[in-house]
Length: 401
Image 1 (cartoon, rainbow, N blue to C red):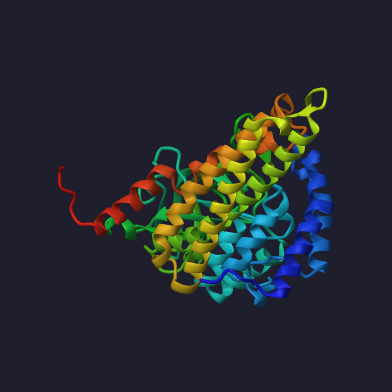
Image 2: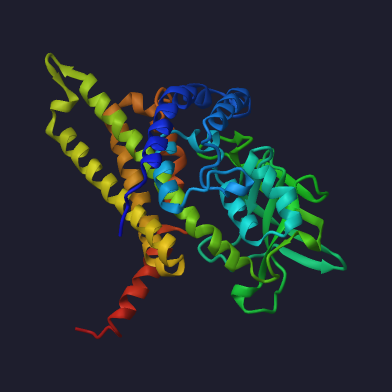
């Protein structure tokens, strides 16, 4: 396997890193202390600059205005962008739009692509993905209560969803709903486009996450669908194939998440090292002189590098052999990188002491919002059990010793 990249890609990564340091990271103080919506004018100016540099929408199709980077290339770029929670948004490749763009590109009709895909890639509109339900276990994605009942040329949708990221201000949602209740479990649900101005689409609230409600793109909503009627042509792909489409969406999505997490780890490590060198604890002695801190720096650096190589390997395998052949690697990185992220951020916060608990650095934000890394896109325990079963099958039935 070969993780080498072109000279052009090396230059792109250098440009991205410089832009992040100079233009994006300085916006974080305002981001941490005010609403996301109040920051939009400044963010739009940065987005205009990114378009001018021809770095807009790195993983998205060229024919719709993206850069068309492959999975390995974007994995590296996603790490650079992940050093700030604003990075992916500024470069037009933020979740959940990135996943919705992939689904629309693969399964959308020409009408759907013209109406939704083009404007989404160009950053003219935003979207959300409505799958998680309040009463149903996220660890079992075939268990859904939301229904979409065919009524003539329409679907009528009823149900309750939550953690619908970025619904606040979105133009449309892609909704997972049961359309074929009598089919086998994995063939019951479909994905349907629902414009958010449709009667019956009700944004109940932005859910408070560890004390932060959020707004606009940086929010997670509870949605109530009450006799929400949309035309049948809003169906994505084939009826009953929602689970199949979800797997297409989640595979690359996990690569994107994991490389973003590694960017956050790298940022936390940088802050840890700077704090260790600058924080004096006695005359002539700083935190960096303590062996326990030196041990943390060494361990975090090794764990970040291991995580990085694991994700690049998974991306390489997906790119060359397909998602099915990379199932184990995708499960590995989901729970491994999430664990590394939590440990690195926690140790960086520890080195910062009381400063780390404040919003004077980005560390408290990482700690608040990325604890969920071990939950969303499949809880760690489900990935571990799933991959363990596949490994055990290779060695035959276990016999008692």
